[in-house]
Structures are given as C-alpha cells and as structure tokens.
Length: 455
Image (cartoon, rainbow, N blue to C red; front, side, top):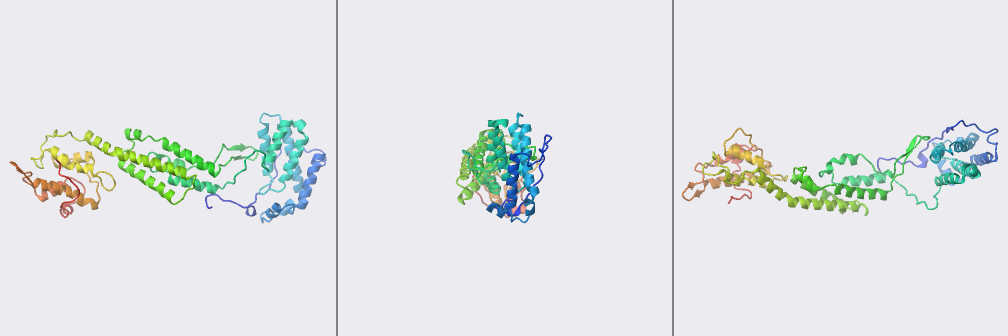
C-alpha cells in the first residue's frame, strides 16, 4: 500500500553496529574474559556463534545476503569479544543502579541501548540476552529475587511472547494513514462551525497510543502505535464528540450562521458526499459506523434548517420592513399609488430566491430601491440584484406585470397610472437597480416568472 511512509526489508536495509559506552567507572576484571566461569561461558558461546555464522540458522543465512552487511566483521574474534564486553558492561551497570529509586527504568533503558548497539538487522544480540539472563539468575541473592525476576521478564519479553500477554498485531503505518485520510475526506469540515477545525485535524496523525518515553542512553523516544481497529474506534468516538458539541439553536440565536441558505447547501453537499462514499463501498464495516453517524447528523440538521428558514425570513421581514399603512410619504413615481401598495408588489424580490439560494434583494436593499425610485431620493446608491443573466427575463417579468397594472382602470378613478408607458417602467428598473442597461431590459420587457398581483 502506497503512502508517505517507507518500509525497508531485511535485504535492503542495514544500520551498522557501534561500540556502546559504559558508565560509572567501569574496569574489566583481571584476565577478562577468562576471569570467572560466567564470562568464560559467554566467551565460548560467542566464539561458537562467530565460527558458525551465518550458517547457524536459516534467518541469519537470509539476512547475511544483504550486500550492505560486512560478513567479515561478524566472523572476527573482535566481534566475539564485543559480545562479552556488552554483557560485562550491563552487569556493571546493574550493580551500580540496582539500589536507586528508578532502578528498573534506568537498567532496562541501558539494556535497550546495548541491544541497539548490535545494529539492524542485529547479529549476536541473542547471545548477549540469554547470557545476561543466566548471569542475573546466578546473582539473584545479590540483586534480590523480585528485582531479578522483573529484569529477566523484561529481557524475555523483547524476544518472546510472555504468558498472558496479548499477541502483537502487525501494524502498517501507510494503512493507518489511509484510514485517517478517508475520515478526513468524509467529515463535513466545510460546514460551520467545523471549518475552524479543518487545519487542526489535517495537520495531525493520531496513531500514538501512549505518551512517548525518552531513553537517555539511546537518545531516542519510543511509543506504542495504535492498531487499525483502535484508530477506527478513536475516529468513531471523535466524530460523535465533535458533532455532539454543535448546538444549532445557539448558532442561530447568536447570529453565527449568517446565511442559512448557504449553510443548508453545505449540509446537503456533506450528506451527499457521505452517502456516495458508503454507496461505493469505500469504507470497511467498522468505518461505516462513523459514516452513518455523519450522514444522519447532516440529514437531521438539514431538516431543522429547512423547517426554520421560512420562520426566520418572516421574522426578519416583520422586524425590518415598515409596518403596513404607515408610509404616507408622496409617491413621486405614481401619486395615485400608496407606498405600502408598492411595497406589497416588490416584497416578492425578497421572498423569492436566485439559483444560489439567496434572495434577489434583501429587505434592506428593497427599502433602498423604494426610497430611490418612489420617494425620489436619488442620492441613495442603486442596489444590485442578485440574479444571473438567465434570470433576467424572470425579474423583468415582475416589472412588466407592474406596468400592466399601472395601465389598468379603476372605477371612478380611471387609469391607475395616468402617465404609464413602457419606457417609464423600463427606466424604473434600469435607473434604480444596478444590473442591466435600458436596451437589455427593453428587449426582454414581457411577461415572465411566477409573480403575483398583490391582493
């Protein structure tokens, strides 16, 4: 599986061994390594390993084929002596640190450091480890049985599965990376208020199962990586946590969602994306759990906004528009028509929406239009219609219907607008709405759209 992480096989990777350091005034015993039965036994085993290497086992035969590895070093007496030295260094370190409060952490860190000094892939470290276990067992009375057993269990745990210990699961970092990227691709970060979280989650890779532990001897930190199953569990919990933190009622009340139409579109887009991902089986059965949570949350939110949007629009109109039959200012466009009647005609531009889901004019823009066109305050800028060229005929249709009404007759009054002409009503549009020229509107001045004559 391709990804940002490189994986090396034994045949193509090698870290050379290095000479480890020993601390606390170490001095080898006289006639070392023939100074005592323990060290003599380690030396004999190390010499035998050097003699048989790499034909001692199938694993070493395969690893030794790596062209980066210098086989002659591992066949030398110097390498055999280095194994005994490492055992002696560790023995000395245990003697010096066993009575300290942090004895276990310090000694195991040093053992880890010594094992790392064998390089990667390592040869001869099993001789060191098993020899160290034998040495600790022979000195249990000095070390203390409980401490000795803990150290033995630690060393064995580096090479074998201890009783009761769970079987380690093989982990592929690239697989974990793709699992996380799939979650990033489907979580609705384009929806408010999640847009503020996108950078934070894009710039992390949550695969560390515990706090890193620093080893002062290797000067490296190590940590346990989560399994694929644990990462997906974390993503499910994190999905629920983030979604649960959103209170749409408060978002609306606090005015944080300023454009409810655009917000609803974002919800629908996110819902479509999640359903498409599930449809094409891009997610495992376990991953589909958070996909379903996201889909249901988006659907529930969209239903809420769909229900509340008309109520919000009515509330805004009631709050911002002039109360009916209160605007007694003269209508300079047609003195026979009350401004409240004008308002009932053109409020339709605020109640109907363009293709982007937003009204053709906001209530505030509508009042600007009336103030300029019908009250005669031409110092006010002409508001811009929110409409595409294809919606031109629809908007013009409202003005044509208004023109037809101005040409109609009322009993005992006569013509609604005695001065009604097509040109006058075309200029009502072009002089007071910043969108199209006179010729453009003239060429489209006909009925169109689903506009209604106000009652």
